[in-house]
Length: 90
Image (cartoon, rainbow, N blue to C red):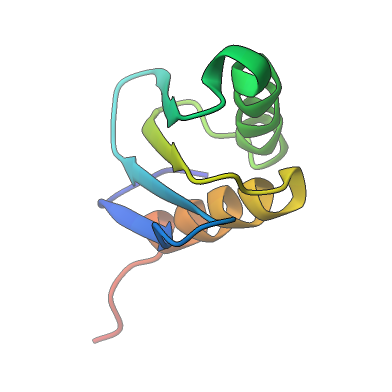
């Protein structure tokens, strides 16, 4: 999957995560979370697994976590990737 434009998914509400993706030459993951020390590695692992699942080789991903469950983070990343890869309807 090729990311062709900036896209977002999620919110900054409690128990959710805001995921932003942008086109890039390689994959980078940035995470902001109040529980980064405890769950940062797990969050990054989940994000990278979704990126691998969709065969993304170039994307800058930023996750702003507000206590989201793993399934929520994965869904937000997937949605942002699909939005970033989709061309505008003409």
